[in-house]
Length: 375
Image 1 (tube, one colour):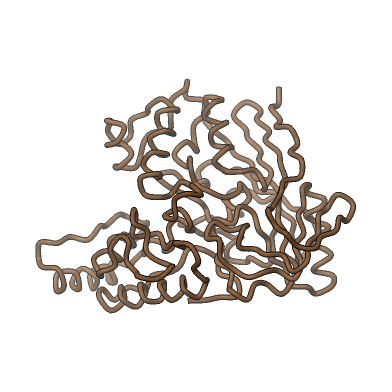
Image 2 (image 1 turned 45 degrees about the vertical axis):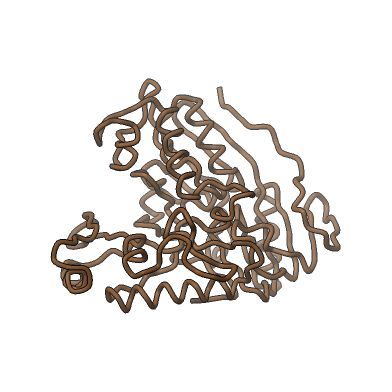
């Protein structure tokens, strides 16, 4: 039988602004957006609409498109950097709910809390996303970014994405292949103004309570197994949560290391020629015995570590003296220590990008989406 989660009632946003209700859709004006992001940064939106059904989402999108109003979609706010001036337009908060599990097939509404959905798949004894535990944000964001961690990516289990196509004015179903997934990228990220993700479908694995083969070396070491081994699903999830928490990558309102977007920069993928030039810079700067991280990344490409680059360029854990600093737990996370502005954060990001490029000739690319702001 299908497993469905109960429909959630309206949730408080903590916003003390003038509001009115349009039917069941909540609308607020001059609404602060910072409380809706994990950075807790950014100015207000001219208008904020909260939609709790797919129909409400589509209606809000159509209204904005028909009137020519700029539109910003917000899910969990975990991959979003909003400028200090805010957003001059309609911000649409997608708060839809829906968890349906039939056999090994899972369908999630875009507004479902991702880490809660992962926990429920583990409880159901199904493998495929257990190493993506603890990642903040909503289910609808996972295909956009092709979310991944500890050897798993959602692209390996997503079968279809149901989205509203703003160009064609209709709901469409895109197959895994049509989503054009690649490292932290997808068709949705390539054309962000076209699609609004409504639902995501997955095909998981019934492995008798065991995880998918553990691919990530750090996770394998923590579990006491070899890469490729399977472990109990609960053990895999709990181990990943502990590893993430140790790096400040599990949300905690009391821990400013988690007032971030997680990894702020993507790991650079280099051609063999680019990697050779990079390797020469490493030897020149750090000595002949130092080998940079290198992982195969498809034909003629090698992936290296953004965290390693940042650290070796002199930006160590806790770097910074202002209200925006590098996390004390992980060099890849930029954080709001309380009282920061978006410009404080971006100034730090620019400093890191410039320093890494000067040291190693590599330009880091930010992973979070910027709105009304840029590096």
